[in-house]
Length: 220
Image 1 (cartoon, rainbow, N blue to C red):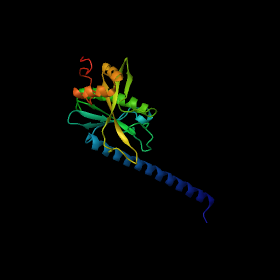
Image 2 (cartoon, rainbow, N blue to C red):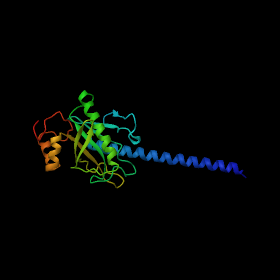
Image 3 (cartoon, helix red, strand yellow):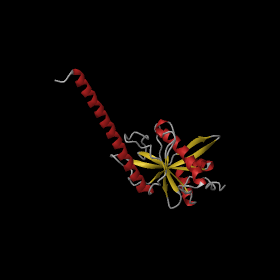
Image 4 (cartoon, rainbow, N blue to C red):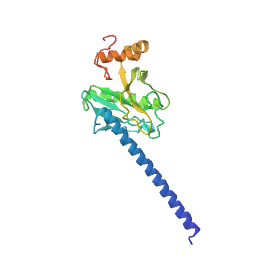
């Protein structure tokens, strides 16, 4: 017959092993979820670059988002991969369901101009990522983010994903973030974001966030 002390020890060991197994199961589920999400992202944006811009302080403890890069025929797509969670509760569900963020630059990875726009977009993504946990963001909305003494003007659109990010019976999407000039933002707020997006497309500026161009509204 086992002693009471031995029974307690065996029970504690069993509980510990059970807890370890549950943690391993959770980590395995998160790994598979990430792999499936990456496959969906690559099906939409093409192969991801080998290099990832990891934040010094992780996003989930108050740091910046990690940046993921997808080379394009013209320039680079930059995206988040940390907003969509296995639990499906973040970001707050809108017209896209839940989503990751994506933006585009005409610059190629490794150039000084790419580094500049990448840092700007990382700051934008981090602010929007935090905001999306408590507020709904939808395509065709506008947004202003304080930036030092100025502000960054943004418009949103749906980047077509064809359901490739859907999982677990839930709809997921890509929310396209486009940085625009202040007068373009004013135009979108007055005449509608669709009208601004049409102008951006007509001038070959869509879907890029680079601001080293003339305004499609004023020409300056």
